[in-house]
Amino acid sequence: MIYNFDEIINRKNTHSIKWDAGELLRKFEITERFDEDTIPLFVADMDFSCPQPVIDALHKRVDQRMYGYTTHATDPEYFKTIQNWFARRMNWEFPADSIVYSPGTVHALKIAVRTFTNPGDGVIIQRPVYFPFTNVIEGNGRIVLNNSLVNNDGYYEIDFVDLEQKAKLSSSKLMILCSPHNPVGRIWNQGELEKISRICLDNNIVLISDEIHGDLIRTTETFYPIANVNSDDKIIVCTATNKTFNMAGLHCSNIILRNADMREQFSKELGMQMPSPFSISALIAAYNEGEEWLEQLKVYIDKNFDFLKNFLANKMDKVKFRIPEGTYIGWMDFSGYNMDPEEIHNRIYNKANVVLEDGKIFGEEGINFQRICIPSPRSILEEAMNRICTEFKI
Ligand SMILES: Cc1ncc(COP(=O)(O)O)c(C=O)c1O
Image (cartoon, rainbow, N blue to C red; front, side, top):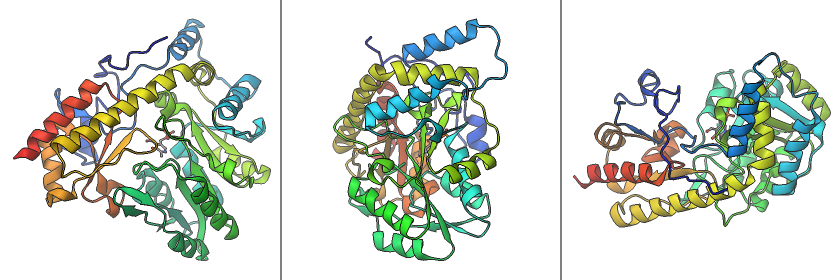
């Protein structure tokens, strides 16, 4: 089947966090302006239809006419489907009993913080990074240890000397790795992953790798699951259908935790969590039959990135931008304008009426940056960029 990613599907008044965001954005003081004409490119979800097999599976589920208490635990197909996906696509194998369902990835990170650290302990993250990492650490009374990434002309790298120093601190107990990294878009290579995991294991730091963007990489790139680089069973990996198949509203993450003791502790803190009947059906359909859609999607996203790169190079060449290796997130450096970040915000959010995310949300390393999520029909992206460009000509 050929999918049409150019199709514009109206998401207004559908309870979309992205398209019905006005109240939320005002509440969290992200932006004041949000109206009928706003183009929101801030939330990491896609404006594309899900794969047809997922839609069909959900219809079938609806037609059963009852949506009572549900469990995945007794269905070997649920586990086999997940195992097959990662074995087939990433050559990564793990036993069925290492899979722990969580209603969300961020929720799983919170549970990991609570399970493997105590209040006052340090948790290593690498800013600029997806801001809920900070929330799950500080919200649970733990301390952020920031192994700030090094920006080499838009290509971010890890300061391993600093990472090792942070790992050696007696307070340091956990590291949350973002792989591929949101927002800087790096796919950590095997050498980097090897070093990260060695530093953590040598210093008794529990390592949890958030690989939720692992399927969403450029067609020319290869993703390396950390568990393939270091086979130590104590490394925890977060996977999800949420991002890959645009089903975040179905809340389905699966955490791979091979060490039995750690799994028991984690599961105890997590409590009994069961996916909805819809998330089970959707996951099975997506992982078994969604590959064709995903491959076409990746080509479309590559082209959106090509569009963005060319647009910036031709019309806004003061913005530094590099196509990310992974994720559908663009990280644009506006420092070339020598403008107050408030004014950059004002021009994009208030004047152009486009909602992105101010880079400072991801840490002070993000000041002067804007994060843009580009998995939308190209015409929407084009309109947003034209509007932004107009405001920067003045
Ligand atoms: C790195 C990363 N982790 C987790 C999430 C959210 O995952 P979930 O909806 O499964 O909690 C996101 C969403 O943008 C993300 O970028």
